[in-house]
Picture 1 (tube, rainbow, N blue to C red):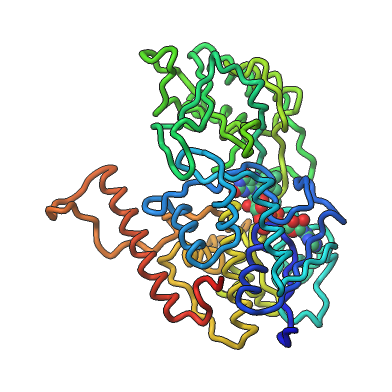
Picture 2 (spheres, rainbow, N blue to C red):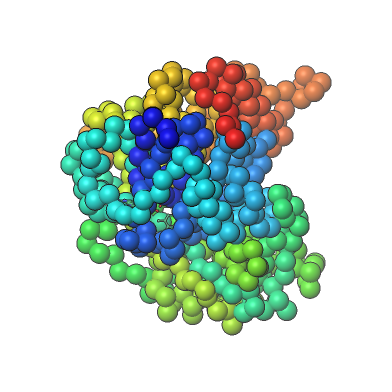
Length: 472
Ligand SMILES: Cc1cc2nc3c(=O)[nH]c(=O)nc-3n(C[C@H](O)[C@H](O)[C@H](O)COP(=O)(O)OP(=O)(O)OC[C@H]3O[C@@H](n4cnc5c(N)ncnc54)[C@H](O)[C@@H]3O)c2cc1C
């Protein structure tokens, strides 16, 4: 029986599950409070921990030239439960790491249930955590229950900001017409666990594309409620109809771009636009429409998406939808170890801190868990180098972001990890013979230098860290 007082983690999503794992692996007892199934959210469907509520993709797994791929690598290095179970339950997805959502969530749940230092309590924490909980991590996500959200709001005095993402529809594989559509990954990329033929592609002629754009623009949209008006979208997650409204070519240069793909029945003619669908479950029975997040009404969605060649008889396992997001003005409210300045016994993790995405949420959970565990064990907390993906992300949340100078709405917005968050390089990349690089060769070389630097700096940080890299 451990004599160390437990740390309480509220929320068993991507961040809370990872935080609880890191704490327990450091030898500190942890109580993980998850309200499902006692109380649900608008998006979760199961009672499993770390449920993926929309896409099943952890995005690029390329640790050399992609920031989220580097984040994967760093998390694996630090013994991430989310990455270990994601790797174990991956499904083919070209250059991306996509997972079988049910197998993944079940494996995360089983690992935490089996850990001797983890206690899982099902039930809502409907207000500020009791005072006797001396170390708490709040990881309740974008759909934090209203009672807890209100308590946080009262405590921080900040107005919370609500806005929409949009969910992409999922189609039954057997309802897709493979006499028109074909399997191929963009540029035949194989990636982790892929075959180079992982996506289903639906081609469009110019006339079909124009009619489709018209239908999107005129299709019935979900009405905004009063309190939802004037809420900005994430630029990386714009609803398909909003993209269509921004310009008739926008979709052809975005999710419907026809590059790197060849219609095998018509190899000499480039389709004008292409819709891609990505495998959504291990069985390969479900495919999601890549980039087709939407706030069109259900009836309009079915009608309009069946205009896509190959989807004329599509059956939808899930149609697209809209959802709310709640997050803190973290740069102002949190200290560099993610403690609430106004009440340091509380730390925050996951999307509620203003990061965006499954991987980023789990990454912030990972570091918050390690910070809380080190503190509980009376060990020093070394700040992460900002040159690492983990450090760059946390730095952005806790201070890297610069507030607008003028009085007005707060400017901090949720952010995926990206190279823009990393400190610039001290020297420009050079070709082997010392010549200057240009164009895409230069961009790739620069990214490689950034990721090499991150790997070196992470190892140096780990060498001085109070907790081992991966306490397996
Ligand atoms: C509808 C929707 C679609 C999304 N689509 C994507 C996507 O396609 N790709 C992507 O990368 N990201 C997506 N996101 C963002 C995604 O939710 C987050 O990136 C990630 O799940 C956040 O992880 P988290 O741990 O912070 O929160 P969550 O994973 O949501 O976990 C929070 C947990 O806290 C629990 N909880 C809430 N309040 C309480 C309480 N008071 N007491 C106890 N438990 C509580 C919830 O039940 C939940 O299990 C989407 C978000 C939403 C809402």
